[in-house]
Amino acid sequence: MFPAHPPEGPGSSNQGFPAHVLLGFAVASIGGPLALLTFLPGTAGDGVRSAGLVVALALVVFAAPLAIWLAFSKRIVSSGGLSAFVEAAAGRPAAVAHAWIWALAYFLYLPYTITFVVYDLLPPVFPGVHAYRAALELVIPAVFVALVFLPFRTVLLSLGVLGAAQVIALLVLAGFELGHAGSHFASHPELNDTGRATGGAALLFVCASLPLYFGGELRGGGRAMRRTLAAAVAIVGAAFLVSAIPLGGVPESLVNTSFPGAAIARAYSGRSFEIVVGLLTAGGTLALVVAEYLALARLLHWLNGIQLRTSYAWIAVPFLGLDAISLASPDRFYDDLLKPSLGALFIAQLVVFIVFPRYRRSVPALVAAAVASGLAVWGFYTLVAGSAST
Image (cartoon, rainbow, N blue to C red; front, side, top):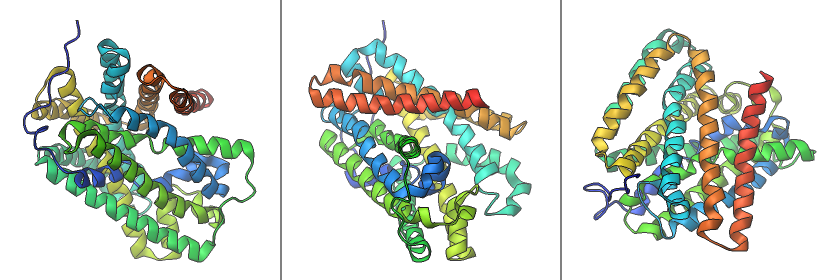
């Protein structure tokens, strides 16, 4: 017998925090927002020349997963997040299995994201960081472990401020792009390239589900969660679209770099703005580590009634240990953890989409489930196909 999920922990359900506190966190959890522009060229491939069209279509496609999450959230708001949705549609055993798959995906994300930021994201903007990469690989996780033990509302507000700063910087960057490259919504789009790019761009929004794990602590319940999640996706989606529209006119020498956002900022504005974009992109990417750490702790609480502080400590030990191990071979460490993490994430999302028609029996539910499931399957397929070709 699987244990029934426990009630929400002390101090997390009755008083709660207002929706505007979660809104900032929800914005920060998507990308982070500024990182989306840097990830888009690698994700979109040849479709990047029609980046405006690709992002617009991606937002339409992503409406299906979002609609499913919002439909579940109308009645289900708890620290179980997506697993609580699976429980409502398919029962407790399926939810427990789903929870561990989701936990594996995001636990692996924690250490390899630190490696990515320290060894791949920071060096193009800050060449002097090379001498300190090993130290940063150990110090940053330790700082994050200390950070999650701070008052929860303080952490959420901090991440929200960082999310807002990223959206502002993304819009400023879009302004420089438009001023120098002009508007290029769709430059000779081809069906195959645009379709592939649309699927990849839509998957960049998958972490928008992280706020769902804080539903048990949100004042206002399901209505507040639905409004917050929809508003966050709308805000980030609009900023991302505005920044993507001129991308087709940006020279390939800037787009096809390891850090396109920073390269474009330097070319069109100067070193100062490059530093701002570099720091905010790295900070936004690392903010996701904190968001996922917090969400993992709440999922463990939902599964087994473990107190949040105990969950934080349990996660910290392997997190710090894996980051220390990564120093032996950072490149291999990133590659080895990335694929199983994303594979588990796509499977976890697919389960939610597949069981949705059991929760809501209607034609629109079937259509949303079909589109969302297709997106998750596409992500898993490209991951496997990419692994097979390397």
